[in-house]
Image 1: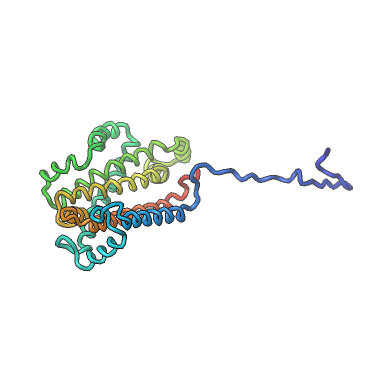
Image 2: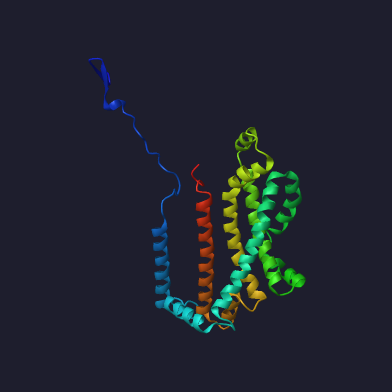
Length: 284
């Protein structure tokens, strides 16, 4: 049976000949918004925390209620804690993490790109990075104190070492994942080495680099708190340590909440930067 009808030399196509558009089914988490799911999860966790503390399933000494923690936040903000105001504690920690992150990014990205482009650079620098990277930062914190003292230099150096490796290795991975066809196409158009680096290599490695920075910031916050627990008189970690010595669990929760808020803000900033600089990520 024909799907076309001929009338006076004019061919009229039936609906069977019309193109059909098929919507491809996604795979994995996709690009759907997860804000509502995350908010519902947060509300569930807070309610569960409140119920466990309110019903006395865990003694108040070990698990205060959310209301007690909120009250303590106001008290610490008003009166300070451990010989310093809340602003001084937070600003000390932010200064250390921001300074170390800037140094680690400035040193780690060029080193990672160089290791991805040159086998000599990879052979020389890969061994020391792989040697110290698996070590816990607290393992060489005493060495930093012996070498650099208990001032800010030892803490910032410790943070730089902890954050440098993820950034460097992610930059190297970004270069090694670069399709060679893209490089050859640029070469065929007469691109010079520095043009390849700026226009091809760096943009292609940028998604991996930003992911490495997010990982490095997480490692940096954990290392910062550990360093402040041992050798500091200012900072969020120091505030938590002082509170734990007096069994002030609500103040410990305040410190943990501040750290979580700061870490979330840093991560959100990197996500925003990622959406601005590499909007094509995950869409190829």
